[in-house]
Image: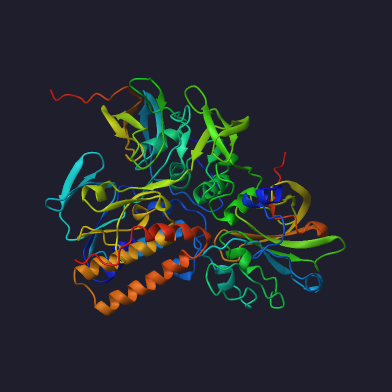
Length: 105
Length: 351
Length: 171
């Protein structure tokens, strides 16, 4: 992971390391930290593709206000990954176009 | 947090709702030492100040209830109910007697081709990544904006081991404190005054940028300079987050010096809505030390309105906080703030 | 806007200004442990250089936004202000130190890697150009707050140019 190992001022206390998947690829991150931060640390930059122009979007505001980092998490679309804590086993996917909300059976 | 602490110290019961995963707002990302005087904990690093405030908050366990990862999503003016959501889907409602809206700010972006590319990040977001979660934001960063945020974040990126390709600033001088500029310059970072970003380069993610000099009327002139960078960090200002204030029907006014629409307020930071106070960047973009003092003032205002504490205590604390604000705003950067505040402050609401 | 103004507006001191002046040469030449140079030419609300000064050499501020003024007679070169200044704008220069042609500078430092005693480092000027090599004499952390005060031996004629150091990575 692309983490700051030594810092002149800060000491980073990470929580428990957990496994999650991104588009089917297994990755590691820290439990409770934002999904977007975990993805970034794993080198993932593209979080979704826009519906009309099919442009790439990624991390941007980190405070849950801009919609740039919407992804499909455990089948649920439009999840603000910059403010949603990572849990073990999460299934994170690039969101293609508009999110489709799953129908109740 | 400051408003909560002040109100709680006067005997109020407070529910503190914060959309972040941890309390402390922007403080938790600040590795630099704060300015000001001892009252503002000058010389203490921002993240340490948030630890001090947290500790203070812990002493009010019985009267302060804290919800993090919890967004106040709406204010319903017909009955004064605030709706909140924890995470993405756990809703609840609350009906407080008085509310302090200290919702902070959001970052501005500039229009330029390819500004949507992943790698164009807000400065606050870069700080969150590197200083809260310890994630390296990129290899080489172009900073856009030489206000305090642009300068400080550039310095912080270097502390995290990231190279700064340069800092671009449209004005003919840095907007932030001169000393912040000096400490980045001496580490070899170029500051391009009177320059702007023309476009981000890259197909799917940022691979570079083109910058160009601009003239007196901000029109591009001179030759384009290509910069290699995998991150373009936007530090071109903030604008107050004031949706809830609008929803509540507070009287709002556009104040350029405070960077957007802000609520009219009295000396205790009370808005035109008798149950709503405002504080911090939500009341106008300034800096953290002043925001904390404003929060204290709003806390006193709320306690006063609820009948907690003695009148002499309220006026004594207000005077002290006003003195501290006047000190903080007495410098070169503070002049603009004072102008702005005079445009949206009323002496009394007459309620 | 001329070149000098342009540099200054971008955070580079080009000449003495209020809040950024050179100590009086006569006193400076003979003052053991050195004298402070503060480069704080802008009015900002900040006073730790004064409140931390153990001898009152950084004079009391009438207004917290005032630029610092120094009573050089009282300055002992203790470098307390170097360690506390939030703007990293204080530097101590000891012209009495060492042999011919060298001086000692006490500089604030908040980067990695930390220099080691005896190590040769690059000395950078106000725009980050390497202007000489320097030898690390001591690395202190006076306030135990991660701001280091680095004592470095530098060429005497460059004390008004050098403002920070860079640790040279071993090949």
